[in-house]
Structure formats: C-alpha cells, structure tokens
Amino acid sequence: MLPVARKPIVQYVAEELVANSIEEILFVTGRNKTSIEDHFDPDPELMRLLQERDHKSLIEELRFQELQAHFYYTRQKSQCGLGDAVLCGESFAGERPFAVALGDSILGLNGSSRSLSRMAEIFSTRHASCVLAVEEVPKDQAAHYGIVQPADGDGQCFRVKTVIEKPRPEEAPSSLAIAGRYIFSPVIFDMIRKVQPDSRGEIQLTDAIRGLCEEGKRVLAFRLPPSERRYDIGNFSSYFQTFVEFALADPVYGEELRQYLLHLLQPR
Ligand code: G1P
Image (tube, rainbow, N blue to C red; front, side, top):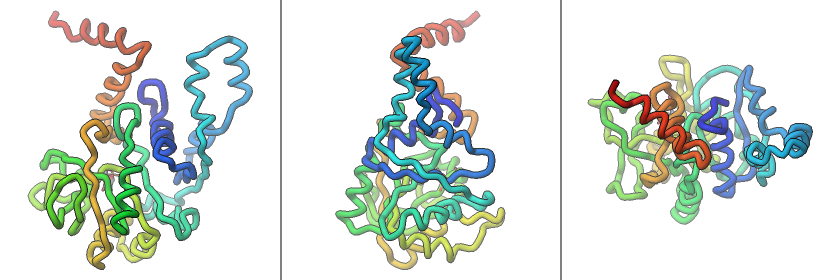
C-alpha cells in the first residue's frame, strides 16, 4: 500500500493488469494486510462526499473503483517464499493459464506497460509452459534477482535454458533478470510442490521454473522494452527514485516539484 506519487503501488499493478485484459485478480496477502481489501472496496459514502464538495481531482483518483475487474483475496499462512505464494492461487487458476504480477514492481511510467498482453500472445502462439519478463541488470546486482540463461540467442523473445535464483555475480549465466511478471500454464503447480525449501526455508518460484526447463518444457523470456522498464519498490533507493520520477510526471504538481528540486540542488 506504499504510495508512489498519488496512488498506492498495488493500484498501479491492478490497473496494469486490467489494461492488459486481465480482469479476474487474486491478491495473495498475509497477516495485517487487510488495507488492500479496504482500498479496492467501493466507498459510496466517500464518493458522495467528494461529489457534494466538488473535489473533481480526488474523484478521479477513485476511478479505479470502476475498473472492469473482480478482486479476490487469499492469505499465505506464513512467509514461505514466492513459490508458496503462487501455490495459494492453484484452485483459483484451475486448468487455465494465468499471470503472476509481483506487488513490488511497477512496469513502465505510471504502470503503462502492455508487456503482459504480448507475453500472453507469445505463450499461446509458441505453446509455452511459461513466459518470463526479463530485463538487463548490472552483473554485480545479480544476487538480487532470478537470472536466466538464454538457450538460443537473446533477441526480444528467446528460449530459456535454465534460471538461477540470486546467483553470485561470478556464477550468473547472463545479466538478464526476471522482472516481476510471469505467465504460467498450471503445470507449474506440480513443479512447485517438488521444490525443496532453500536455506531460509523458502520455496522459490525460480526453482520450480528451473524444474520446467529440466523437464524440457518450453520456457520463454520476453525482454521488456526500455519504455516499459521495471520500477522496483522493494528497496529504499529505487523506491525514492521511482517516487520522484512519477511525481515529476504528474500533470498538476510535476512542474512545481521540478522547480523545487532544482532549487534544492543549487550549489549554496
Ligand atoms: C523476486 C524473484 C526474483 C525476481 C525478483 C524481481 O525476488 O524471486 O527471481 O528477479 O523478484 O522480480 P525478490 O525481489 O522477492 O527477492
């Protein structure tokens, strides 16, 4: 629920999913995260109050309540890793392919990415079991990401030979990192069940994806276009940068902030 400029991060993610024609959205939450459910619940009293007081711009901020989406919630019982969190969605997904979007990642300025639609198209036309969004990261940062090893070239879309979760830089097979968006066939669920917990007791989704590669399933990577880069909200440094960049792009307050930052940065 951390805000970036005017909206909580989770709202950018939900709006991105809807813009990519994904309208059945399951949130996997945990203890103390009921604020997400509250946020997406329609709030007719607040809406009426804002209309009475003619707060047009604030009403705009609540437009997401009209998103053509259905929100569902389930809770991960303990923090057992991303693989375990995805397993919480098994009965929701059923026999259908599904997308996973990590809540600490916004794709594109203001969540404007349409990459998930392209990934879904690749998934069906190339009969894949999994499509991963990837982007280039500095090699010395490899230990923060799942890193892919391309099998056949590394154009915009390529087959993945294997994936390693958070390798040491000298062990990273490339500088292409998994970027918080995935499309899976339901075969991933059985594979997650086979994964052994890591040293911290977490079931890693990346280990299950490696299992798919080892079984010869078609795992593909889709390189995010530069204009749809991933904004990482998972650490202070990139969270601050993201906040400033989104706030500078704000049509009402952006220019004022630009002037203020220029003033702050002037040598004294
Ligand atoms: C997770 C995934 C990792 C991926 C990263 C960014 O790591 O496990 O493979 O590269 O998100 O999308 P986390 O940031 O949860 O440590």
